[in-house]
Length: 107
Image 1 (cartoon, rainbow, N blue to C red):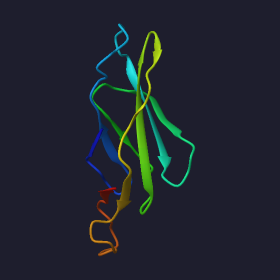
Image 2: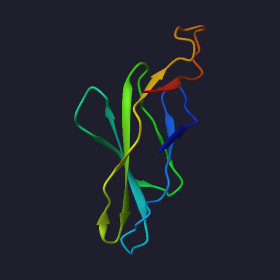
Image 3: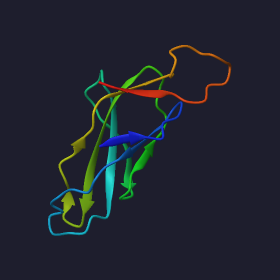
Image 4: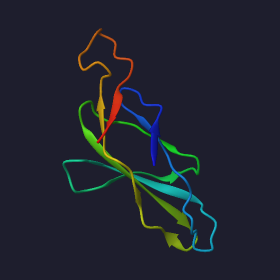
């Protein structure tokens, strides 16, 4: 899983389709997130398209984990879990009243 197009409260996730689709056409993906300091996953969407998905409502300074599961007519795949990321400002402090974007820091 890769990350791009991040803003002050969102990040776009990209992934490749699974190598084994269980002999069924993939109809979409389930995307989940969790705060890295917690154990429970929260479903972001159960209708992500094949190309990726933008996760919103993230908080500055929080570490997040994301996972994606493929869905087809036979069920749901095991999840693909991405690297933990931290949402934060690119220079560490507010430099103006208007915040334009955050940087994701990989762990």
